[in-house]
Image 1: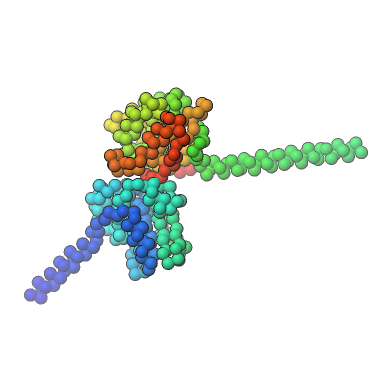
Image 2: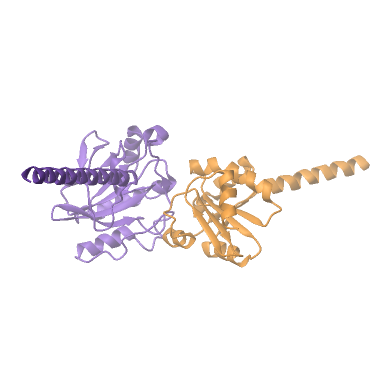
Length: 161
Length: 218
């Protein structure tokens, strides 16, 4: 009886655990992403724009994963926004499972790139990877249009504190 | 006295010479820096003619096309955003070649960094997608740099004025990469339609997501 209970707990634990690691990407409109960031006055946001087809973006993801693991308890929210086409959601989900990516992943569900690119930053030309640092408490923002490593993520984060 | 004035005169000549040399040198340094910073064609600028190798082995130049203008599209074979536009680029050529604005496609990627962008792959893409226009390879990436292209796909519309090709539009082909049917603002078409009736282009620059061009490590 005790053994059965123990096994059940283990099975439950494993399935819950795999549920968490098998994160599914969600579609998001740019306006919703903007609202999500703007309305949250307690956290600093780091938004990384990437795609499964972008080699330099994939090379950068381990730095974000590592940063995420070290900063989960801090007031810093990390969001990965994929620019894969919305009909590639299954491909993105497979990729997330394969890489066991933990930070929240969205797929941009907005087609007017000329509009959302400029809303993120006038400086953004359209290349990815690109990363947006937003601090709502002091209105400081930073936009970086190049691959960065974990040291640089921390460096840019410090710049908006 | 005479000796003195000769001396003064020579000094002035020498000084002037030195100043000219210094100015020339600093100019040289300046232009070198400018080159390194990648000069980008701006709207209204004349773009330089180019002579690049086509998939059939022949060379294609802007002046050799001998049309009223051209739609120059930097594209490649591996990028989902570029691939999503292939049939739309074919449609653009079909529609606008007869009106004096044929498509010229250029693959800017450094072959060394991606196996899908070599000359054979260009031929396969052109054949499979039924390209009706030249598909050129910018081997040393000089043309890519002079246009300031950073991503594929990127479109540039040029119009011939007094024998020069003037840049009229730079940016996205339209406002929906994923679906041709859902595109509402067809920027390249809008630009050419205005040029065809002698108007100035209203939207001259747009931004879009694309695959970063793979540059050679300098």
